Length: 431
Image 1 (tube, one colour):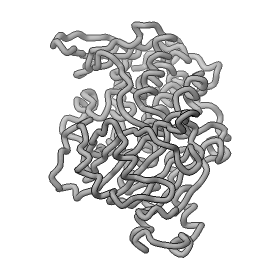
Image 2 (image 1 turned 180 degrees about the horizontal axis):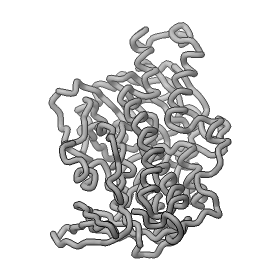
Image 3 (image 1 turned 60 degrees about the vertical axis):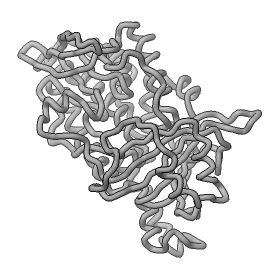
Image 4 (image 1 turned 135 degrees about the vertical axis):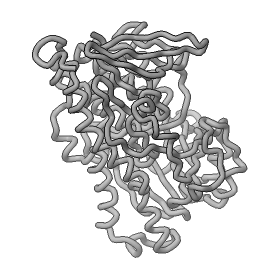
């Protein structure tokens, strides 16, 4: 029988391509009527790029974004705290990539439809719940007209995002996402790249931060590129704000005054903010890690499983890893509860640790430490922190998030090119 997937975001589409690679039948259902290149920039770490390349998407990725060469942290005065090479520049066998999230989703959608057929993703159908019995699982769906239908399959993968109806059914008392007090204003601007020309830069501290990086090639005539940026201001969690609004048009007056003096020799932050065509406001939310993702034939993936703060560039990367690890266990255990349980046993503890680490500001906490020690003002950062301390902040998070260089470069593929899923044989239907 078929694998059902609720949601055609990065997680669901990556899983569909994985199913095609291993020969597993799959159908996806997406609530929007048409996938459009919405959103702003994201970073994909080398462990995620490795998986996409092993799906045969290398050429499309290089056409899509910029290979990040450096990550750099600065104080609120624009003074460099720490910088390090990233991706190929750091010795990884795979790059780190800065891309537009919507364009990445569109690319994955095209690949799914090219490989699995035009009907592999059925749009305009939102998952509302499920039921299951000894023979399979039934997914309930509704469209914008209020029409309902059901779909029958062997297992159900809920990749329907932070507001997942499937997660809500399994956890009826959970409530809304958790807001920790931070508000993000996100946009892209046409501007000249800074530092190396392919740098990801973060300036400020826990309570006020600016993150920026290019997500397109530089125009050879104008010298301009699409520069993604995020302005963040953190308030107390009980502060009054538009917490329940999503993709809300941002008002520049709400945050620009706080960044008006952030004119550094490597970047003019207020000028970059003013040059944006559209600005969107997001409450920075996540959810508490769950004690379980699965209910027999059903499990969670991506933001439905582990929504996390956008710190450390890991949300989309972890969703891709979810898809690939589940594919690995489907090859090993077929369509079975055993496969879903093995997937959860590997991925739930790993992603839960990242959710908690990101609540503690993840690798960005290095900026708050410097802020606490000297208000971000220094001539040489080693007067404030030792080189070993600086290196340790970066190394710990890479190990936690699964992209430690030595480990990643030496581990075998999650799914070998010869791996194939079989529906028959021992354990094929022990659900």
